[in-house]
Length: 522
Image 1 (cartoon, rainbow, N blue to C red):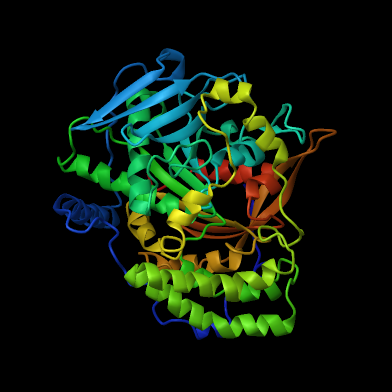
Image 2: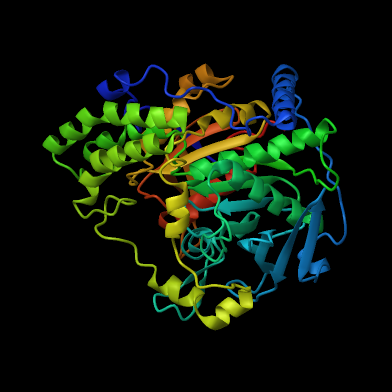
């Protein structure tokens, strides 16, 4: 990868709005369950381990526990059981031959709670190259309530679907080129998942995903190596919560507090694309993104921009109060203010919120038709009709959880040596690159000053000529990084970077997995 200095490639991170913002965005709070002595002990242990890592530069390692057949090729069971103390979980697994028949694949349900019929749907594809040694990545789409099957078939999966929904098309830029991939419909009720009970917050999401990983890796230990969690949009909530939960339970294992049956997970890093992670900081940048982002077209006039700007501080105060108290009525008021003052002006113009270059909405008719074909559903083991976004999941997690901030979960992960990549397409509105850049530069971690002083650089990817296979270089965007933390603005991409920039995003993903951007510390 070639890197070049680009001092003028990114507009300066200064504005009257930012200077007039809150002196302290977020009260640092633990998101562990109240009154849980065991998890409080785990939290203390995490702090101790983090301090050891910081002082010695030697991260803690968790030796894998190998049980049973190690890969899909060795395990033909349909039901995979896993028990931790009195809690029983299981996976119901199909072996479809769809999308990319050149690799082993599995799909089906992780049964979180059989009594309430709470199930997570997943679709797993082995890596196209050396799956037995490849990393394993879990992909979580956002929403809340957006199906990861949409990402699989429109962004970074092994295939796409034609406009009629009658056939699939091989995707040469699938992220399975670099990793074993698991696309998960979560929380319960999303996509093909079944919501016997709906997750009300990120603690539940984190625990459910952790138990899915436990069950999966107990039966397929071959894939329990170099594990990463990647997501987009509302994944800015999901991803830190899930990775934090895994790290907490790994620490519990390391200090002898783990229940019988737990499997250590080889967690190595996380990435978030166009995420909403620090809502308080990010909403400050919506007026500028709408009017004068420096990258996307202006979609409001100056008068509307001024009005939006004048409302920001009030909305920020309301959201901060929601984040601090978690009160349902307070959060509903903040949500109403947020949507009315900062979202409606752009929506009323008819613009595509996720790509300001476009008008109207994306058309997912082909994907919807293909996934709801009875033969396809039967082969992948889907028990209900698919929907791109679940309104019930959306209503359950919005507005209270939506307005919460999750950036405070990132510093302990960085201190433990995990890689963290935040990337953002620069045409997206709600989870725009300006807000993501702002919260990453303000993040309070051990190397905050070093990160702020690191220059922005062009991130370069190789491009292969279609006619003569010649190798050239293309600029993906501009990046700032220090050690194991990086922010990347992806040029001319909207909310769904892998869809808009498939080759470039695959290169980014490979560099991330290899520990080059950001750096792997172990």
